[in-house]
Length: 212
Image (cartoon, rainbow, N blue to C red):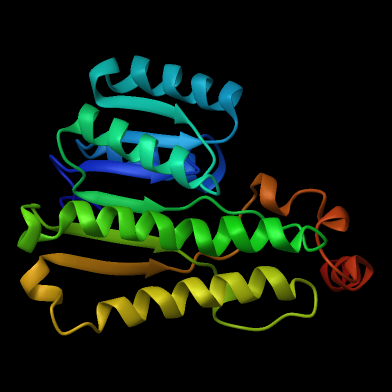
């Protein structure tokens, strides 16, 4: 990321912990100004305090909201705009992996990303007075392959990848001044991979594979 985001105003979802927190830290370390959202108010406030002490309170702000709540997401986006003046970089990162809560997983992992993308799109588009910008959607290595362990999660992450790549193919991308990117990180030691026996199907197969 070095040299690529200085002076950038960033709005990121799911930033209180895990990979999202590391993204926020990286953006701030490179001179960015960041607003991050999360549904976990306690952890979010602690993360904001940590980064405010490290990078300055004028450079980071936490907003508690749920990306599956359309009006709250819109309100949070406007709050981010007010704090940053404009959003140059939107990162849709919030996600979950709980296979038996499939409706929640789809709503958070895919619908939330689509909503965040179009909020940023309308804000950034140059033909309507925006300054342009970049939208990064976080998929997963699960967005590149199939798995019997997490079919719903894989489906949502593949949807995110295809959605983002398809938007990037639009003929008016340069005219609007919006760039798209999709990241597909591999497994990391985050909350989403802890206690997998309660989150995925056929957990015994995964445990056997890890033990071999």
